[in-house]
Image 1 (cartoon, rainbow, N blue to C red):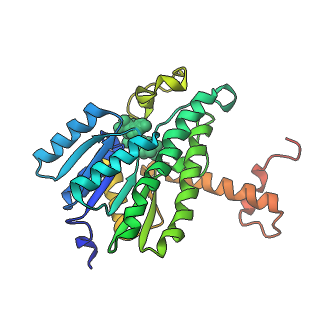
Image 2 (tube, rainbow, N blue to C red):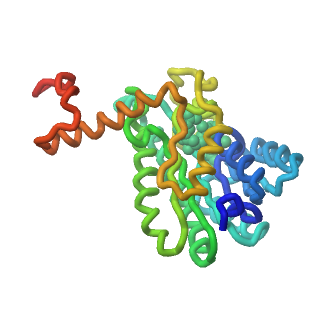
Image 3 (cartoon, rainbow, N blue to C red):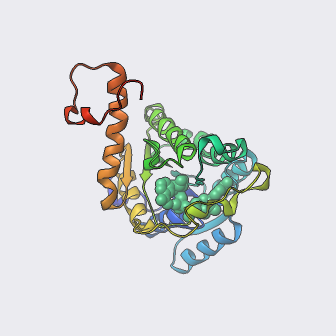
Length: 290
Ligand SMILES: NC(=O)c1ccc[n+]([C@@H]2O[C@H](COP(=O)([O-])OP(=O)(O)OC[C@H]3O[C@@H](n4cnc5c(N)ncnc54)[C@H](O)[C@@H]3O)[C@@H](O)[C@H]2O)c1
């Protein structure tokens, strides 16, 4: 079937769809003829977005869900299947960001990040995959990681980065697992998108303890890529079953490449590889014992 016809008439579930990248994904998929379940912990926000998309002629519903809660996710799966009959595309996109040094972070900080970013994805996989695997035809899973899945890009993002390492690792492992069922898996790695991500703690339940201060404010990241562009690249990648899709502002690409090379250099140094693929970088390596 031509790529342009893969989506029309099928159904997608998008978590974290009240705003930001999730709402843009839902809009892109709806515009391509998919029915879409918009799911988010922000009950008002997700209904508002669903109403907007319905006014544009799209077939969508908004559902409140807490992806960190397996019962809430099971209810989302029941509602989605009852409404649309089958799910062909699962976009595990809900995520939260918290800045802070590892040594200063509370266990509550870590648990909140991990429960939404990692367990949230696993809860949705466990709730939706059985029916998706039992079905036939085109089916796909997309998990939203980050460019932080490779290395933290400031001294303040190690915990968030660790959750996104997990999303990347689980997604790359899941891809061959689901290949036999004919289900594709793509991991989306955005970098600096213009969304509400800096204000993630607006959705932090009190059970995870104190709300840490936000060292960089809670506004939209300046000079960031538009969520609509992230969504367009993501959907193109889904259609061509890419393993990884990057969506980051042009001006940050060299910096990101440097980070990936740093990771490679760490491994290469540790392995004592005789052929250094980055000889010009030797001078920048820390002296022994530094
Ligand atoms: N914006 C960026 O620069 C950027 C970069 C890389 C990766 N990402 C990732 O993109 C994804 C979307 O984030 P965004 O940038 O659109 O931010 P956003 O804050 O606009 O959207 C995240 C959505 O997730 C929802 N959410 C939070 N906790 C939830 C929970 N427990 N259950 C269900 N929904 C919940 C929020 O209500 C919100 O609508 C996240 O996984 C994020 O980590 C964003």
